[in-house]
Amino acid sequence: MGAPRRWRPGLVALGVAGAIACAGGVAWTVGNAGERQPVLSVVRPVAAGEVIEARDVGVVRLGVDDATQLVLAGHRDAVIGRRAVVPLVSGQLLAPGQLGDAAGFPPDGQALVVVGVEPGMLPAGLAQGQRIAVVPGALPGGRGTADAEAKVPDPVLGVVNAVGRPESASGKGAVTVLVDAGAVRRVAQMSDPRVAVLSTSVKAVS
Image (cartoon, rainbow, N blue to C red; front, top):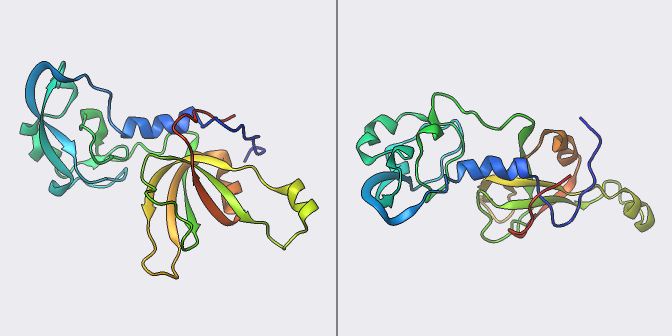
């Protein structure tokens, strides 16, 4: 693992955000410009590598400039049983490149890490695709203030891939985060990690 990189406020990893952006659907010109055709949309989140079920997709009629870039509703039966190559987000339009026989995710140089979050510490409305910072809630060993200030690790920035809410008031929540592969050890070493949702204006990290 490489040395921890210094965090710059106001920046998020472009590579990390880009991976989820491709999962969040392609930016189509949708409106009344093109012929309205029935196409498939995602109605339930599907993790990368999971099999797409009938309940995961729906049909919408949209005016699109190039319907060949989308999966037409008539191909629904061919979609069911395929695997999502990348995470699919509810509400996105389904594209042929998002389907395959195995997951092509996470991208090279990135990794998925699960962060256990104490009860009551999950931000309200936390959802797939949001940019977050994982920060330590406490330093191990109960160090003094001066020592703690010198050794507080940098936050780890990433994008939410999945959120598991606790099943009971005393249980932990679980947030699966797409991060730079070199940051996995830093997350694992955090004591009582917390999750902070970043503004959409945050763009990159270095």
